[in-house]
Image 1 (cartoon, chains in turn green, blue):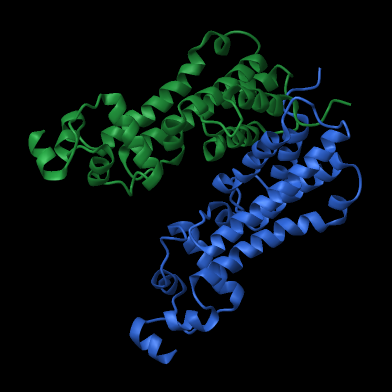
Image 2 (cartoon, chains in turn blue, brown; image 1 turned 180 degrees about the horizontal axis):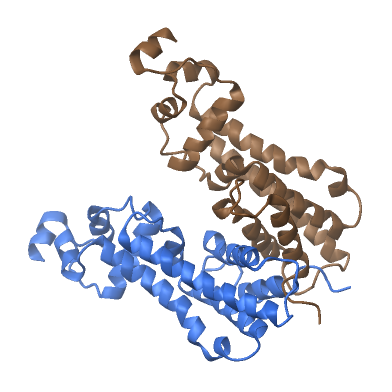
Length: 202
Length: 202
């Protein structure tokens, strides 16, 4: 530690696993995971590379922890009571709202998850888990269609892609500090749009 | 030309402005505009850098032509008869459908437009034009709301962002060669979802 401070002007390492992860995720989102080196992480955190290795085995472990946080948030939704019981269309509506809440609440982690490209084992694992989540939501939509609660003229896989497209686009423009739009308002608008559409019922 | 072939094994330059642009856009989308050098373009096109300079002043001109093609496609929609006359909600529905058609028809050009980040004058100009297009569509939604044809509980700017989010997400997964989903089917599904929503009217 002392050596590191003398060598690089680095600050004392007071990081917890969570606070170091937050720094890493910011750098990954700015530079891309591939474009981030341990040197970049060390500079952004203000501690030496060896201090970072004291916390983790390397940048891939940081990636795994970061995307796990996003995936745990998303899969956690499916275990919640209103996602498990009741009519499929109501469960789907609940899951849609909660997805928006997880996206806005865990914004940098989900942003990273949505941007991984599959160059490492961890990235491929993350993409695989993401596809599994999409698949489970699509199953819910399929069940709602089987119940006769969904318009018959949109193919389930296509509808799932479009709904995920709308929700995931939040990472491009939603900022927790506002622009005047709160997370509750966004969740309400997404649910309203996805389930009722824009047009006022005639 | 002869020199180029001797030096680099480059092929004879039979490019038209359009075919050279198609190559450039592919490279821009793969490497990012910032990450693309004239060297990359020369290699991808199989002609020398000086041959490329015979066609254009540099990579920024290629970017300008490429995003112009996307922007001309989008702004062209607003000049079409069904986008100009009639009830605002019907015009909006027409514009939504045509946006999907332009996105799927001009996929690489619109993909590039959606990814520019504002580091050069041309990129900033493209982002400005894109915002202007978004603004005009938002105005149409505002007019439809004023007519009483839109549900009252979604704020116009937020709804515009979400609808654009859904449509723009197409560049992430739509491929003209299929996966079994045609452009017509996608346009129908987007219009259905945006205007009617998923839930079957009670």
